[in-house]
Each structure stands twice: as C-alpha cells, then as structure tokens.
Image 1: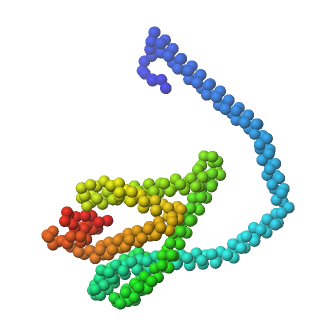
Image 2: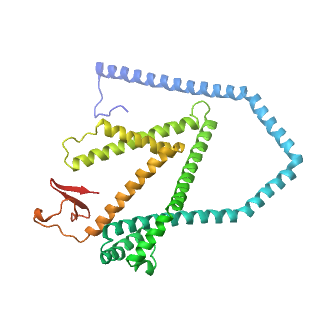
Image 3: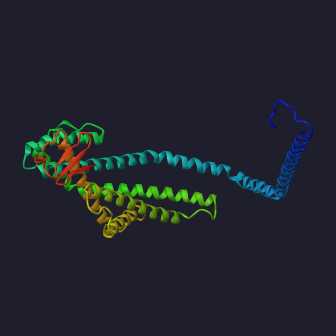
Length: 343
C-alpha cells in the first residue's frame, strides 16, 4: 500500500521512513492477532452454549418419540378420519361452488340493475317531455356507456326501447330496489367480514410468532380504524380546498364547521367498515352515498350530452352552468367568473 517512487531516500530520511513503516506493520499485525483471538473466543462460547443445550435437545427428542409412540396404535383411526374428512369435502364442494356462483351472479345482476335504473331515471327526468330526445340519448349514448361498463353487448330489444317501455322498465326496477339493495348490502357485509377475518388471522399468527411484541387483533383493528378516519379526513379536506380554489373563492381554507362535518362522515364510514355501524349511521351513510351516486350519474349524463358540442367564441352566447368540452379530453363549466374545470 506504500507509494512507489523512482528513488530511495538516504540517511536520516531513510531511517525516519523505515521507523514509520515498521510501526504501521506492527500495529496491523497486532490488530490481526486481536481479531483472530476474538473469533476463537466466539467459537468457544458457541461451543459452550451447544454443550449447555444438550438437555434441551434430549428432552425435545424424548417428546417427539413419546408423541410418535402415542400415535402409533391409532394410526389406522387417524387415517380413517382424514379419509372421511376428504370424502365429506369432495361431496360438499360441488354444492358450495354452485352456491358461490349463484351468489356472485345475484350480485352482478343487482349491480347491473342499479346502474340501469339510475341512468333511466336521469334520462326520464331530464327528457321525459321529449320522447324522441330521450330515446335518442338512451340508444346512442347511454346504451354504449352501459356496454362499456358491463364489458358485453346488451340485447337489441333493450337498445330499441320506446319511451313507454323505458318508463315501464324504470318502474319495475324501482319496485325491486329494496331487494337489490339487500343483495348489494349483503355482499358488502360479506366482503368486510372476510377482510376482518383475514386481519384477525394475520394478527393471531403474529402474536404466536412474537409473543409480547405484537399487538392483539383488537388493537390492530383500533389502529386501522383511526388510520381510516385520518385518511378519509385528509382526502376530503384536500378535495374541498381544491374545489374552492377552482371556484376562485375568497377563502380557500376549510372552516371548522366543514371540518367537523367531514370528521363525522369519516367516523360513520369507519364504523360501517370496521364495526358494522349502527342503524342510524348506516341509514344516513346510505342516503349520502345514494345522493353522491345520483350526482355522479347526472354529471356523466351531462358529459355524454356535451360530446361534440362547440364552445361559442362570444362569451355572451355561453350558457352559465352549462358543460362544454375543453378540447383536451376534459370538460369545463362556464360561470360568470370564468371556466370551472370538471373532473
């Protein structure tokens, strides 16, 4: 490692450099010997531990031998029990699979009916007095939208409904709404129950693996519950502030009243997700969810109607509150203060 040069020092300089190099050498050799000694002492300590654990290994071996000896006389019975369990599983598997398929089909049908009912209601409310416009919007805009959402084509007779048939189908779907909502709610409950069971299983495994260092499943749910509320509040507060900025409001910060309202909704949502909520909270949450869903579908309908619409150059010819395409794949709503972007 010493640098190499093209000349050798002489006299006093040579002696001084020789002394420095000798000191470095002796220091390195001493450190090497010290590390070797430490390695030897570590192996000696490990060997002492191995000898000290001889009794533990012997007791474990005795336990395994005793367990095997106890099972030997009843091996036939254990094998028979395993065979019976396997036969019972194979016998019940087809019926369980059919039940799961039926339940899944019920849920898919309920989701489809819910979407169709919402779109029909929106079209009839806005264009019920103009049958030709309602039928055109339904055939050319809503049906293709539904086919994209479902991932499969709809029957031709469904596409070619007249205004009376649209009203009849909407009435039938409305009358069946309670049953449909029960199916959707049960699916949500089953999904939540499955997630809670998985979380409990993971918590139990962690407790079994590291006793005393892992929180219980109840503590884990409590932490996840608080995290869910905090995430909900952060997301809603940011969204509200963004909406205020887009509307060019003078005050864009969230008020205390608005924050408390968001916090109440967050608690209701977390109660429903983690602990089932209560009747009043579930009812209020359902109503708010249905209202938001209706608003979103009305907005989707506005976007469908706005396709192909051109923006008048003269702002006096633009309708306040009307949706226009922005030319970049998005939309904007015209207001007296200017454009408001619409997601």
